[in-house]
Image 1: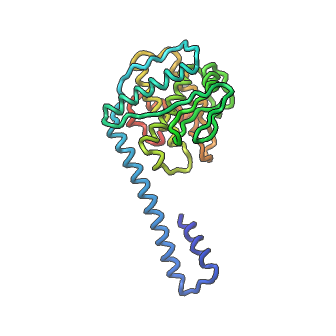
Image 2: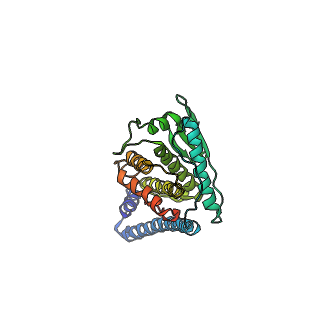
Image 3: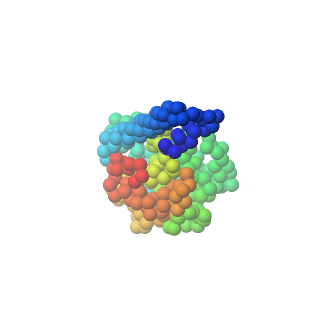
Length: 269
């Protein structure tokens, strides 16, 4: 930071700065640097306050009764069932902690179609949350391929497959909706989106915990979620859109699943 401020100050002096101005220039550089550092500290403090409020307001996940079963033949109906169960879990959890109930819209893009979102087109590879229109977009073709274990082109080293792999994706995107409603998006400043993605994975894990406690998981469901988390992780750590490595994404989901407490889902988990 100091080097950048110095370069800016020196650029202003290219027209000529006498030796008698050197002290003033150094003072000006120090002043600019202090202002920049104070602004960064202010943003960090406000963000940490938001996380602290989340931790105090959501002490633990509440049990709900999501009906998560295998055997759904209609992908669109299955996606709707899943998102409604996830919504019911968070609705009850936030309500019992005195927080506003969440709301979100969703679009299951039909095969071969393109939906226009506020974040851009959503086609057959769509699986994202758009804060611009508060909507989860998941392509039915994407969900079907994932369910059948034939999804190609994922960056990680796991196998994305199964109905609970699909459920993991939907719960993750719902986690981004929560971040939007909590104001995390507005406060976050970072070189990559990795902390946001891992927190959304952790949120997804807390919902998975509630399903498990209801005895509704079947053999292999946990492995499906973990395998999908490993598959969607990436190794492009210098990219702004880096979502976390496969191991980091698996660990984030497991943290939420094992504890069942959203308050454990701090940024970067």
